[in-house]
Amino acid sequence: MRLKLPNFAKACDRTGLYFDGRQDNTLTNEKIDTKFYRKTSLEEHIVLISEPHSTYFGHVTPLSGSAKDIKNSIMGYLKKNSDYLKLRAVGSDGANVNTGAKNGVIALIERDLGWPVNWFICLFHFNELPLRHLILSLDGVTAGPNQWTGPIGKELKTCEKKTCD
Image 1 (cartoon, helix red, strand yellow):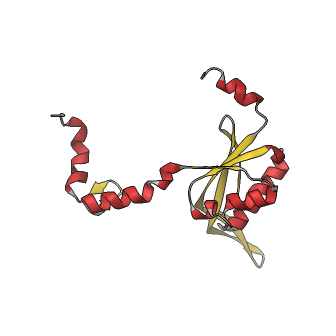
Image 2: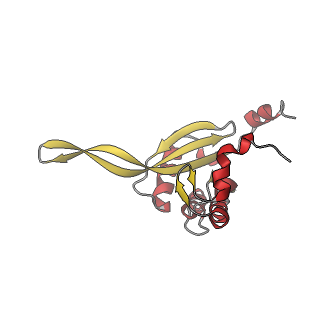
Image 3: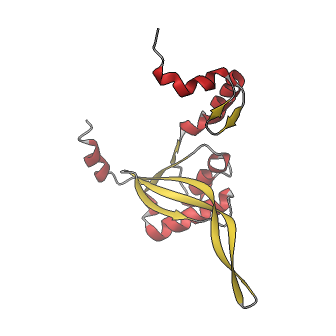
């Protein structure tokens, strides 16, 4: 079955778009009077991946991190660079800005397209906060990115050397 899957995917005329964003410090030039000055500003950057085959499709920089601006950037890029009429699936992490039922990015994309799409939401992010709270209640706070204050966390440094009894 695995060997036949790529051939099926190539023949499939339905496509998916997956996106993820992050805020980055971006160096920009700001003109004051006749001189240009470098300025560091925080910008939202969205990477786009097309399916099938998980290929890099492009990236966009929305005006802000709002769902409306992210949707406008993604749809503008799609309309210029692809046959967006074949879009049938959209995937992202579970952030509310992406998955809000009325005004999330995916819901706004559906309204813009005029038809529903399949939503693929990453469940790794879904478990992140509950797991963090569980570790906090069982082991206490962390002392840094790789340092633990509780007894369980302190044992992690040498856990692979211990034997299973």
